[in-house]
Image 1 (spheres, rainbow, N blue to C red):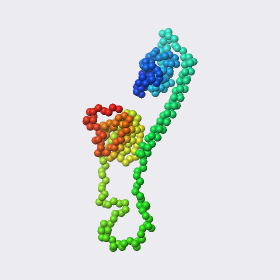
Image 2 (cartoon, one colour; image 1 turned 90 degrees about the horizontal axis):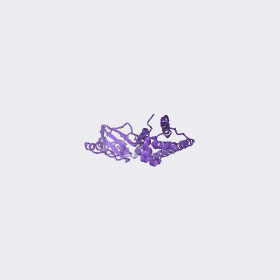
Image 3 (cartoon, rainbow, N blue to C red; image 1 turned 45 degrees about the vertical axis):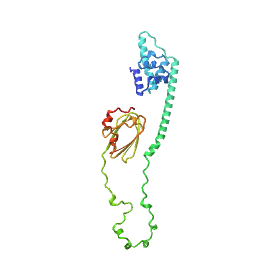
Image 4 (tube, one colour; image 1 turned 30 degrees about the vertical axis):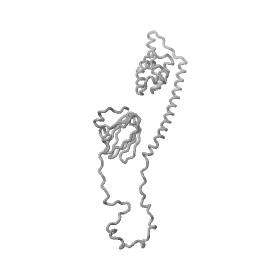
Length: 294
């Protein structure tokens, strides 16, 4: 038989919820909740009230209340069989108990529907709030220069007879003719610079966090990252980051730990180039100093 109390306690600790908060919301004494986590069911009231306590606790820690109540009932039945072997009398499940349980199931169903509607509304509100940010990141580039077709048509040009004869042109014009439209003077052109050393950023988050990133001239990427395997970004010359929760962002730059971007809930924007890498990499003094508290 599984350890019901240990499973409830583990679920509560994963959610980081103190017992006093559960007691305040469910109106159940802390001593009764502690007894439930110790599998000491003798401290709980009998009948429907004990099952109501277990159901309320399961809802607060995010477990399936029906499954938890079923496990609790199996524990009670096991204890009752042991007590029966010693001459104890098993308490009877009355009709009132069944009516109460049916009401509890209906209430839990309505609660689930309400939570689902609230989650959908929250998601719609979040998308509406982030819409300007996405539109800004995907905005079209500036308009290109007007094409050659925008020049006046040939019919609007003065006739050839009105043009001065070639002999009247100054010698300098024959020696240095003007450059063609849209072309740059040969003496001002510079060779393309060689590719910069690559920038490699590996990061992970300790909580769900939106991160916007753009590598060189590639299309920007906005994604909600969750705790898990590290992510990897690469760029040849420029890497831009926009982190919505700086306190949960942990990163390395070219294999070297990066500096903390800020506290929990703060927004941080970073633009990495080959000239600014050392600004964001931790030094020996940074590694020896206490880390920012989240």
